[in-house]
Length: 411
Image (cartoon, rainbow, N blue to C red; front, side):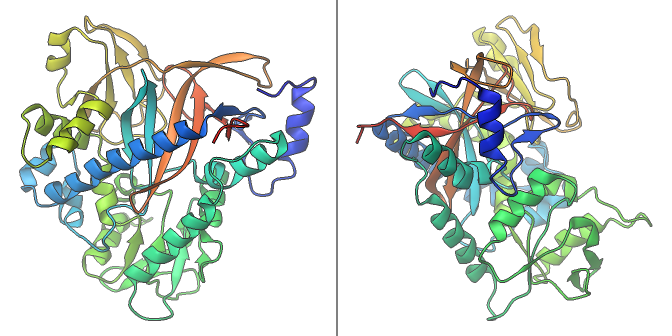
């Protein structure tokens, strides 16, 4: 850790020079001016583990895409999305996805995949390099921004046949994190940015930008499908559902693709674990070993975890930033919960709880201790940038971003 005589001054001077970044969020410090160092062999191991976990998720998508409607509804998918879920528009199940991993013993456990609308992109693919340079250490994410740009362009080329498609990147204009993430992804792509509220839709015809030009491909990295389907215009028209219809009719392409939303549902982990417990031949022997090693027991009801007497987490099948998450002890008593309850209408899943490791870090509030969560990105299923969030027992939108560097003299 880099010692700082005047942490506040150094942090302010450093982050004010980075354009289009939200070093503070909600009036609080977000990006720490500190760094956690890893050995190069540990970074290599994280990427190997991430690729294995991704293999399990993406293989499972092919099974779920062909599951009966009743199964998908029982998993908590909104009925309006069922036909949309069955679409396979490009080879990759998700172009940009993020695994959330907890260091566990000498390995890692995956608590979820953010396959559809992952955040934490600019921090790890771009900002992390600036921090590493300032601290004089090597950046484990070196070169990953180039791969990110290639993945975005590749997904566009696979999606659109004609040579000059009209590509629009969109986000909530008044949310700095959403907007700047999308603008970061847009760099180098012949396209335009149109705020969400300026998009115009004609049912059965197409989606149009603010100038009335029909959109071929919409990049909505931060606008989740489960929110989109409830979207209505001032006249009460279900414009979100109309947008899904356009995708189903082949009149609009979206990124991430529909299969990413299929994997966004945390109930997918219950399906994976259930198939693993019965040693289903859908997974190879090696894949069963990976599930046992890197996944956590996850169910659609709490009984199996209560019978084992292990602490568990109850979380919504669709949800973000720790919102609506509850933690129970081995006796089934509630011991911790997030104050936000935005996703309580979604089907809950129950997952065995494992402790996050604790780390000491510098902050505006002085030296603190917090619990560590590793974000590990996959680009078209291949391992990519990594980085840390550090905060309370439940990682939420007030958790800090902790940059990561390589230990000197290692590898």
